[in-house]
Length: 450
Ligand SMILES: [Zn+2]
Image (cartoon, rainbow, N blue to C red):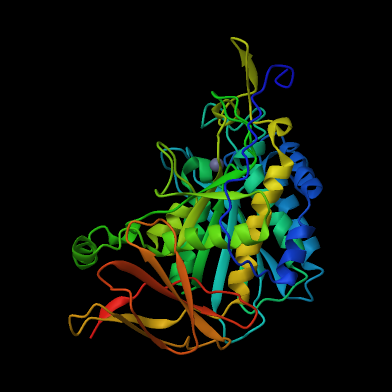
């Protein structure tokens, strides 16, 4: 019915384009082209066909429930891994979640991890892309009855899976983990387990991309059709700064509250995704998550890792956390017919381009410092080359005004120090490594040094 009524088709016209130089890596472009909306649709419909993927639901059936769903996800990942020449391995990451507010009896949860090992044994960096495969009904504790969870979050799970299929055949110096986690709706328990495990086992996680609710391109109240924008949520003040007096005092005195590692990752996503995905305008949202909501990036932030949340531009809350029904003429339920598979394809391409660029890049520069030993209107920066992994061809010094949301200048330096005529009092800076093909590391904000 929705299609019969008048629909305001907003031709989100190509935002006015400023002239900029875009250098694409043909290998990354090729991979983004291989991401298929048809495959994404197949994955989402298959996940919906398990009827319910409630974390506390049935695990014994071969055809329905969360047990059947996770076995299928694992088998799919294994199918992709068959083309990786042994570099991709698939595992269940298992935990027993004790009784808690939204878990009435201890429950066994299984995350599915497909790990594409990096080709450089000296490069320990790990990149994670995540979606949650559990779903819920209107009543959070109800494990019975249909809850399709097509948008929330079969869409994010499909992103992890479809890009794993494409990337499994390729080689990257750093490791990429394609994750489908459980327990998000009950309290982010699946991702919490991986985050704690990563901390305990010293995983060198450089970035986490959490895709949750990335498939709807139709706004609920405004009837707005928008398949051009996608939101990337990033925290400003790091979650771990809470209680860290020194870190807070530094931000109060010199700023930096807009330059957390997660916000640098968000800016990096915007730059990289718009380099590779046409008609995608990445909207940076300068907050950790939406009102009243949370997601699987938060447990990683709590453990001190860099993480962001990716979510569609306009949510339709009639299609999330709702039993399938019609009430007062309004249709409810998270059904696959309301997912825009071409839009999910763009989001998947965005994730792929970012992961490929990061996992191909040299590691970040080390000990990045801004020299503050004297009063001067110049800015002197120094840093060390990354200790391990491939050698950078050089570095970009990034510059922006203190009031600017994005980096404005990218100055190439073939050295490990730079003196700029921009005053450190008036501008913000960061340094990133870059290789000969133009793959950049995440930017590192300098600390004051003498
Ligand atoms: Zn969700």
